[in-house]
Length: 167
Ligand SMILES: [Zn+2]
Ligand SMILES: [Zn+2]
Image: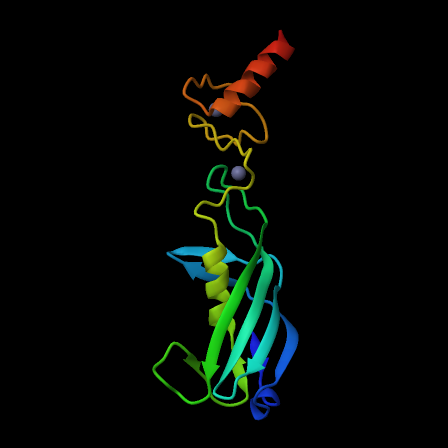
């Protein structure tokens, strides 16, 4: 959990602090899919006390280890996403999150920021060749002997090159 200690700040309206937090978060679930972190999550923040609420603004960075949608191999995905949130000490029904005590758990907002930065598809590399549709071998690691007619155009270029060098 990413804990934001506001004990000092909440007694100083109009003041702000800069801080950097780092935390090991193991994973989060999104639409039935597990996203594992491969490094601690870092948060750079400017936290200010407006008098009525605590506002945080900054960015979140780190890396995840998703599985490639094409070749099914895990890979490192680096992210850096903005985070902005208001917290009111007094519960209210507005667009702010209420908190009590001296510590705010900002983990939900940090995860939300990461989720918003995720790509639609997770692909290990733009050049990923994926798996052979016939034998299932990982085409990034080597060529198989299958005769694939309806294959990725990038792969056919590669195959043409290989044919040239082999003949
Ligand atoms: Zn891949
Ligand atoms: Zn094959």
